[in-house]
Image 1 (cartoon, rainbow, N blue to C red):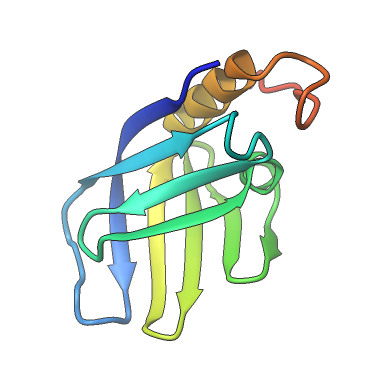
Image 2: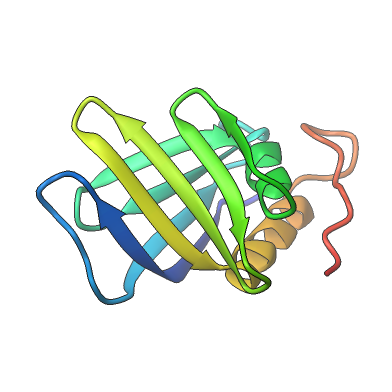
Length: 124
């Protein structure tokens, strides 16, 4: 199994010192050897990388969900929002849903059925 990495364009809104008005490349990562149940999102402006449940990302594309410092929710028909809370503030990252779906599909291809989480239906 190999690591899945994908860049996605996203808009970042933050209450910290750094705010991006234009879309920036955000790195999406999945390493089935290290943790088959988690995904990572790297924010370029802050050099932060957040690790959270792959199922949280998937569920958040359909309805608002949250766990700990991460919240995910759909934003209209074509966008999704991932919100990160830390001691430095809150970062809100807006993605095109298609990019996140493509990433999730690739993660489920990287993890055989029966290992980690079971693949949910990702057809929209």
